[in-house]
Amino acid sequence: MSGAATVSASEANKLVWEGAIPLLIHLHDSEVTTLPPPPPALVLAPRLGYLPLLISQLKPYFSSTLPPGVDTLWFEYKGLPLKWYIPTGVLFDLLCAEPERPWNLTVHFRGYPSNLLLPCEGEDSVKWSFINSLKEAAYVINGNCKNVMNMSQPDQVELWRSVLNGNLESYQRVSSKLKLVTLEDEYTENVNAVPTASQENSGEADAPAQVKSGRIPVRLYVWTVTEDFDDLESAPQIDNWDKVSYINRPVEIHKEDGKYFSLNDAIKTLLPEYFPASSFGNLGDVSPNQRDEGANTCDPDPSSLPLENAEIKLVRIQGIEPCLEIPFSWVVNNLMNPEYFLHICICLRVSEVNAVQ
Image (cartoon, rainbow, N blue to C red; front, top):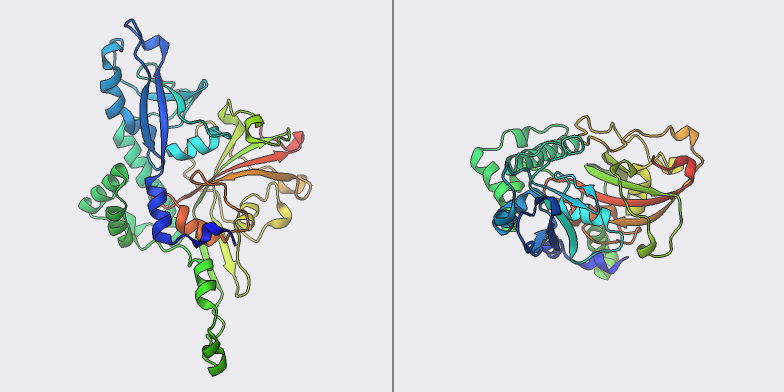
C-alpha cells in the first residue's frame, strides 16, 4: 500500500483545496501600447479554480497599457489557446509533463479565438459550466440530478462562492445536502475490518460484507505519444488540442470481499480502446454533454486493436503521480474536484497506427 493512503480524508481534502500553481503571466506583445512594456504579473492560482476568474487581479495590473476595446480574456501557453472550462490544475498537469514553476502563460484581453475556444462571458460562464458539470456528475452517481436541480438559491450561491474563495468548510456544509455518495474507502475498510485477537477468539469477527457497486464520474485527458521517453523533460510537447482525447466516461465498480479495485484497474476499464482485455464490463455511454469543440472523442473500434497495445507512461491527478496499485476508492474520495468529477491526465505510448491524430 502506498504511503499516500495513510493520509486521512480530511487532511487530503485540505491539501487538495489549498493546492495552487504559481503563474508568471505576460501580456501579449500585440496588446502593449506603452513603453517600457509592463513586467509580467506573478499570481498564485488555485488548482481547483479556472483561469477566467483571475481577471480581477490581471485587469487592474495591465489596464494602463491595453489598447481601446472590449475585454475578452483568454490565455495561451506556448501558442496553444487554453480551454477556460478545464480547471487550472488539470491544464497544468496535462500541458507540463515536466512541471514548470512558475508556469509562464500569455494573457490576451483582445482578439478572442472563437473558432478555437467556446465563448466565455466571464464569471457567469464559468459558474454555469461548473453547475452543469455538477448535474452530470449527480446523474452518473444517482441516476438523476434532482438534488442539484432543487438546490435553493442561497445554497447555490454559497456553493459557488465556496469554490470561488477556496472555502472547504463552507463547501462541505452545502455539498453534503446533495447526497452524492460515491464509494466507501477500501483502504479504510480493510484497516477497520481486521479483527482483533479477542474478536477472533470469541467469534465476533464480522460476517463477509455484501458486494458493493458504484458509478464514478471521470473526465479523462488522454495524450498519446509514439516515441518512448525515459524522463519527463524529453516528453513530447502538446502543441495542438487534437493530440488530446477529452472523454467523459463513468467507471462502474463491482467489488467483492477479498479484492480491491485499483487505479490501474480503473484506467484500463476506462480505456478499452487500448486495453480491451482489461475491460471489466459495460462502462455506460459517453456523456451526451460533451462540450469540447475540437478534441477527438471518437473511440477506435476495439476489435481492430491488438490486446494491451499501449503502455501507461504517466498518470497525474491533482498534481500527484500516484502508485497505480492504490485503491481507486481512495483516489475518488480524496482527489475528486468540487463538481464531483475525478480528472485524470494520462499519457500513453502507442504504436503509430493507433496514435490519436
